[in-house]
Image: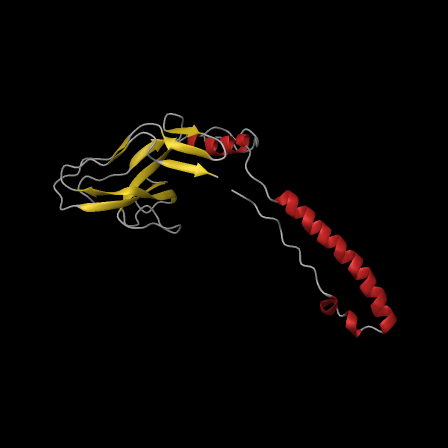
Length: 199
């Protein structure tokens, strides 16, 4: 995750109206302006050097620890863990998801289907690596066995807020291989199959 430097607007002498001044006043004003403009350009360059940043290893660990394991953000004491950790609810979907999708969007509808909860703790998510850091499901996530059903193909997964209904999606991704679900099939993600990476 990279933050970009702010843009500083530097006006021209035309935009400042210097050309409407008498000649001597205009020359004096332009001289002052050009010195100030050089200073502004140096400031913009300096800001560009300090405003671009990358997460440190400690920052990544603290942020992903808070998000996935409900541990307080060590570098920012006011970002506390939730009183109740709660769970993320993993869902399956039959069509492409986007940033505006919700948990109901093209959600799986096979017989017996239900979302599966994964607790926000080290028991639910394992953190690995640095720059980038990745959160992975600690244990297998197994959905209910499909009852008598004509079949459907799951192409996306998501994790979100609610156990049912049109809840908020926090993250989503395409399945590496589409999954055909029909009678007698039990969809499952093996341990570490789902990953969320902070870069």
